[in-house]
Length: 395
Ligand SMILES: Nc1ncnc2c1ncn2[C@@H]1O[C@H](COP(=O)(O)OP(=O)(O)OP(=O)(O)O)[C@@H](O)[C@H]1O
Ligand SMILES: [Mg+2]
Image (cartoon, rainbow, N blue to C red; front, side, top):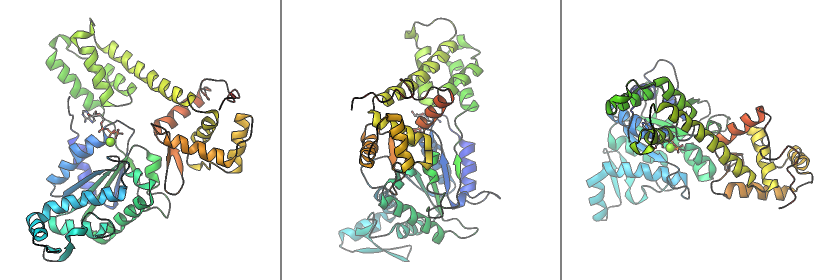
């Protein structure tokens, strides 16, 4: 496996987070979106975190998908507590053994040791301030899959607490708390920033650029070094294949491995075989979504259809939605039936529908929205049956 580092990009983001760039708003929070499997987590952990550490910043990384059964607020608190404990170290450990309940951090803040990591006890704001004092340097909190916080009330509370911590700890010219949030779905991340009631109202969502030409050049050089017989590698063909793989390095590298393997039985240039593999993957992805869709009950299909069609305007139970369901199905359905369908779309594995704590719905995977748009533009929606043929009778 190869690791390609995006050092320059990480460096720019560090500057922005520190508020050192003339323009931009990253010191108020950096929100990064990019499609699934395009290298977000790898970049955050492998490039951005080390770059921040080098700039003398204390980094806390937490992935809200690490355990989706756990509350996002608790996961965040725990990650901060762990970092804090690392700094309190000896003091706290001996204090606990000696039965002492609280310790002073940097001679100032009193911390109740038994409360660290408990959201209601030591609040997130206090925990972050303690960490800042104990570490003696600015703190960066990197939250991966941040949109997941919006699926529970406790998660929403945690986000609001982080906003408040940011406002308390940062002053113009002095950034003590840097917040980085990433997710695979721009529309969901938007809910953190877009409405006046959103915790990070006023911030913008940035797109984490996909791996690109430099990554391809890097891979091509590696191939040429290992296989002199293949020099020169056709970089444009590699680039094309990588784009067809949706800029997802994992699939691309696996296909490279397969076509370059001595076991592939493949003769001559490998590039056409790679491009073929990319096309196969694309059709396979689409076939998977199609079969997922066709595997649903007719009533689930129309509810999902309405959701994909309406995007953020989706209201599952309003009169218009109910009319839509009836038109497509050929018979009316009740609010309860629509509710039940949405619930089962959420409960499937993999889930097809995402729900926020405020009762907003969206597709679980943004790829499904793209698939829908493309098919609709091509006049190929709904899949499988011709439009109007959806009411198949069986339940
Ligand atoms: N810079 C890179 N160099 C080489 N391989 C990479 C790089 N970035 C990502 N990958 C590979 O791509 C795959 C996906 O990466 P990663 O998990 O970082 O993506 P992600 O966007 O966080 O995915 P998800 O949406 O599932 O969270 C991994 O197998 C990883 O090894
Ligand atoms: Mg990830």
